[in-house]
Amino acid sequence: MFTLCTIDTLPSAFTAPSWLPPTEHVLVHQGDLALDGDLLLDWNAGWNGGGIAATLAGLPVAGQDIAGLCVQGDLRLGGALVNADGETGPLLLVTGSLGARQASCGGSYIRVGGDLRVEEVVYGHYNHGQLVVDGQLIAQALVNDDHGIDVRGQPAKGSKLLRIDLSDGRNPDDPESLPAALKKLLKKSPLSLESVRAGLRQGRSLASMATPQTAQEWRDVVWNDYTRIAKIPKELRTEAMYLALLAPGCPLPRPEVHELFAKIPARELTPAVRQAAFALAPKSLLMLPPKFDLQREFEACFLALDDPEALVAEIPVQFMSPAMAAHLSARVSP
Image 1 (cartoon, one colour):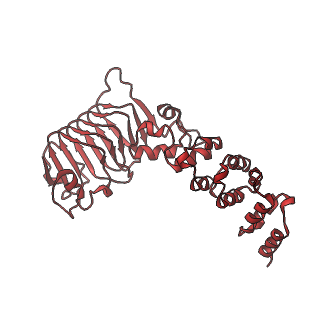
Image 2 (cartoon, helix red, strand yellow; image 1 turned 45 degrees about the horizontal axis):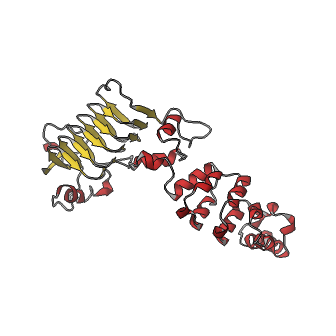
Image 3 (spheres, helix red, strand yellow; image 1 turned 90 degrees about the horizontal axis):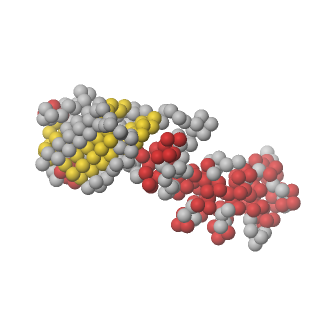
């Protein structure tokens, strides 16, 4: 049963942090609570304005901000606990144990009076929030990314909890590579560290992070190893994907841009894709299939440049046409 009360009228079973305003309203559930799906501990998930009170508790309190959820008993989630915002978030107090598939702990204050049992990963990120567990923390891994984590229960005999601190074990020459322990946990995932962090913040499963899922994740993977372009799923092999790979921020050296461009299917070599490759590395056009007229391609791409002087030295002399020379002269003349 749900009720609505203020921090200063919480039942004595709960210990709220002293810095919370006493008149803030919270949802209180007496007894064990089981919820399907994820529990989103971010303000934009209906806590501001009271929408969460209607959807979660059936309480008509429209317009009333809800500062958190307090469960006097156990809390069982069918999905993940997700506090993706590292700066802030609603309060979560559970007097009993808490069970979930994943737990992402950011800016919220989360306190579990019993055990925190998570099927995969507990991820604590940024230092504005805190996770306090009075019992044991039981999970495949605890990943700490500069978060306040206080586990007071003693690990059970034979506990195999993997503890990963992202402030340790980083490669100074490649800060976006995964630390060895995290890479092993993710079955040698090719994702960048930032992509994995984003996935953990959102409560994604380990399986979903073993391989790239989104166009941005594939872009980052290919930028790290251009040969992986061949692994991009068919449904993502679009002009938009190749333009993302050939965006101005591409970190690949020019010889690797040439090789990347050569691996793009001929049907996807649209004018926009050819122009993007040319802007990064003009000699990429030499990798075009025989059906393309290279003289025409170099000229069209060069004439589209606002600053042709920056790339003129990289144009093979045999493709430098009178029109290109005139375009260059017009741009550099006072």
